[in-house]
Image (tube, rainbow, N blue to C red; front, side, top):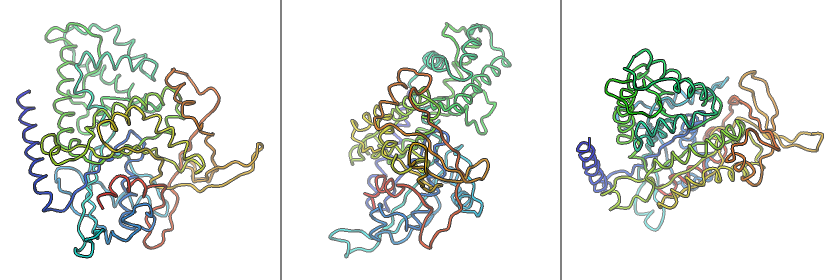
Length: 470
């Protein structure tokens, strides 16, 4: 394994040298990674971003769009034929239909290439014609990112962390009690192994539904064609000296196989090639789920950022160390669920929530930012009369009933520590406030020619992520 790892590193270094030396003679390519945890809105973000880059009437904060430097945008075949194509046309049709609906969430990696014809600016702009800039958008589940932390763990270390994390979570105490009565040194019994893996997976699904973010291994939640395979048939067990042929020894072997055959190829083939990254975060959903879920989101995002290799893509750095993530944006989604007067509070909470992860990336030289966005705006703002005075609300079409409803989620604090402190202290509920969320359906759209779907700060996000390359 060591020799294979060294050989792989040499291969990727040679590929990096080749890419760096040929880059001046080819069209520039931006590899944009889009990730986030379940229900953060990755699919909608990519669909709306591409639609708004093709029809740029709603993108004034993207400087190249506002100035007219982007002459045209068009889709091209992606460079990697082995990765599924992001189904942009299907998702856009769902969001813009007369009776629009949300598309299915991300369940596997996918890719899409959007090419922009851009007129260079500056002193030499009049001496050269438009150039082509390719944006390769790589969509992948955030749960897979959490798995990268497993590469540095032994089975015993992972088991102890997983059992500690399960305590107090939905289904977690039951699983901990179950394995406490199991002797991991007994000979392997496959039905017992499958039953343990199923119980642990059920706990992970319950925790995710309750709003918890750190639910790994990620492929247990998104198994795809690996469902039922031995590589997904293991679970955490109490630490012991596992003899050969025992349940514990086989789970340990399968854990190492999971790292070798699932996690490491994802890192080498896809993740390590990204140079710009957006991490979508459902902060409002975590707040609604309670202090424990909010603190779990903070820990999960710190773990996710630990998987990145942030820094600048300097010439020598890329030759000897491979590509590094230059810019990372943390975007709190569903900003349209709040009146715009509360957007600064949502952004401040996101910045505070991700402080540990953000500082780690800043220290390594990457540019980072946090903002609140809505890739597709589903509501309108109103002010209604309330017994305590005028109340700023949003109004939209409810997903379950299809009826219009006005919604006020509660007042977010100006000081983020009012939320983060009880979250860190393990409080069961918020002491002085109650926060709620609504499941809005996408609103029917009436677009003028040249306009993409309505959004909140999608253009500002695009300017941060790749505006400097246009």
